[in-house]
Image (cartoon, one colour):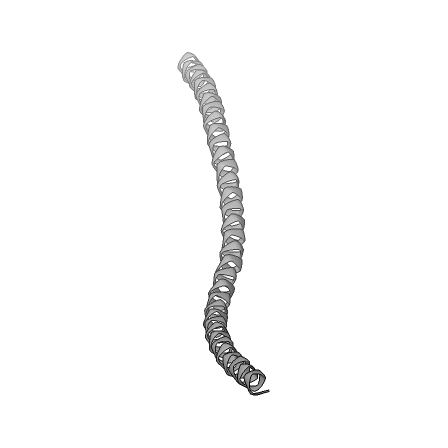
Length: 125
């Protein structure tokens, strides 16, 4: 009976060692798996940060472009206002040219009358 007990005890110790080694192997594999997963998480986190940095850069670029667009829009509006003013001045210049032409015509008519009267006075004297 002692032999049987020793046999069962030896069997239990052997089985316990095997179980212990299996548990250690599982723990090593589990730790390796966890480490690999952590490395993947770190890579994804790094990629996410890079993407966020890219988005921030693009947001800043869009804001800069919006500012440039607003400045150019203002310049276009000012150019349109200047165009309207230029057209108004062009019309005024045309009016002044016509007025000057009429005054010049009137001047030559009066000059002709004066010359004619002067010629008549010379012939009378």
